[in-house]
Length: 317
Ligand code: SAM
Image (cartoon, rainbow, N blue to C red; front, side, top):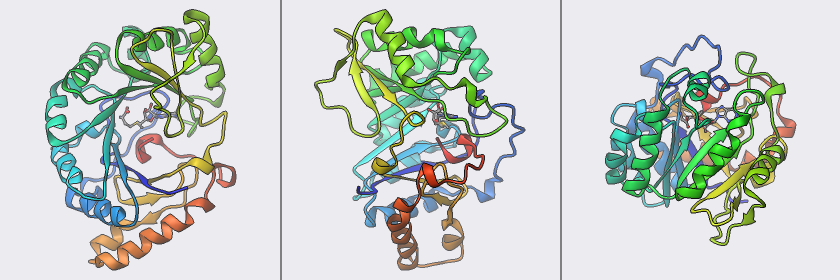
């Protein structure tokens, strides 16, 4: 398996407080001087590109709250070795920013939405912003950040009732609605008992809309299983990171906003690349570390992880 995908968290700050991500934590954010600067991120991505990374996703925290994020998009798009640059957002600021992101060279976008019902959305995120996010989804489609993917995490007793309404978005809009299984991360968020396997989510969709059929457009790269409701404009996808183990097909590394490389979401093991950069190391030395990380990636799997607590908002999901 070629390790060719890097998720880059550009900030640990977010404008929402989703109950399964930040939860009840008193967030102490990384001080600004510790957050990687754009030139540092650009250098890391360029050097990783020289080591085989081809696809980069910007995430957070919320990437659109990082000031001048479009400038970073422009810099990363210009790196020859990177074939694909994408971004995951909660969509709150997308209505006003979609055009400039597209103009900066962003090709497509993932938007996290866990409910189609205003009050339920507020209960999950802490903010009454579903309308704004909906405007953002439409703007992303309009400016051609395609295909727009919608990510939904379903929690028992919280938003199960929203499964059909979320899936229905794929009937009328050219979007892929992907159901991501809840991953319990730490004691401040939701209990592990809130987990619902995607088999149940799929059943709820099929009970309402009939059997799902395989997509014919071949859009099934990565861990998502993509299917279609009959005659739908878009697709529904299932990312089942908890009920299945896809370590063998995991092609991703993560760069945290404070400059740590994490080979595996489930392992606390990390490499401090920021210190190398800030101590004035040359490109050769940094690439040596990158090659070591890439070669060791296969040693880390969910099965061998220590089971320590972590936070998605810190790492970037
Ligand atoms: N703020 C952006 C957003 O909302 O998409 C990017 C960061 S967020 C941490 C990235 C993704 O991680 C989102 O799709 C979110 O739903 C997902 N996520 C966060 N906590 C999760 C958890 N405990 N289990 C599964 N997915 C989670």
